[in-house]
Amino acid sequence: MQLFSSWSRWQTQAMTALFGWIPLLPGLGIRYLLYPIIFKKMGRSVKIYPDVRLKDGWRIKVGFGVVFHRGVEIDIDRNNYLEIGDRVNLSRDVGISCTGQNNKIMLADLVSLDRGVDLRTFEGSQLYIGDRTYVGPHTCIWGYGKISIGKDCLIASHSSLYAHNYRFEDTTQNIREQGFDFKGIVIEDDCWLGSGVNIVDGVTIGRGSVIGAGAVVTKNIPPYSVAVGVPAKVIKSRKN
Image (cartoon, rainbow, N blue to C red; front, side):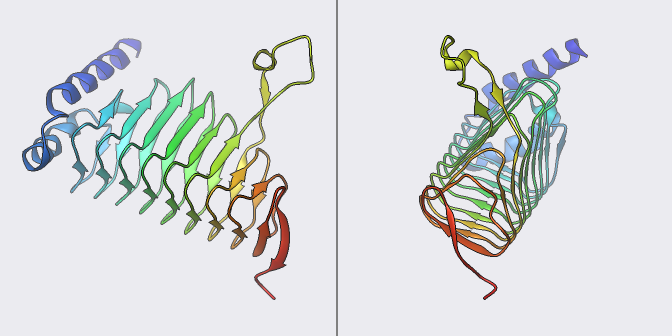
């Protein structure tokens, strides 16, 4: 298995070095014909623009009509997997990374990641983004804990979801040496997060909720709520 994994990484990096730079129409055609060799699965009508960087294509499943724009960088280490659904759009400079062991990232159908979105999982974590969800520019979604984002969500630019917290009780040790705890984050279907929203570990945002720009969400939000502020507080229900 180790030998196969090393071969897969070498093959992926060799293919992307040879053909990843070729511009526009000839490059799109060449990559469409050749990249199925390096992916675990690749559907029809996939567009891979120049300067897309992959570490190990065998750990990636790509659905129908997926678009990889310039500068997309995907680093999936061994024993980790990335599954990309149909008609997913990865805009310029999107970064996706799985490090450690037994991580999985799943992007469902019609997910759109805007420019500079950064997805990272660490050591046994999972990240799921549901159908038709949009993630705005320069949003960071990281975690050692599981992160689940539902269908039809809108997450505006410069938001952050971090599914872990560092320990800091022991003043005789540096904080980075004390480890961390994690519970996970859940955002249910049909939620809208305004620009610059921060979601901390352990929070669930109920279905149909709206979180105002710049809010810091430290506690669970009931379904169909409108919450604003630092820390975020529910100011009304959408059901009324």
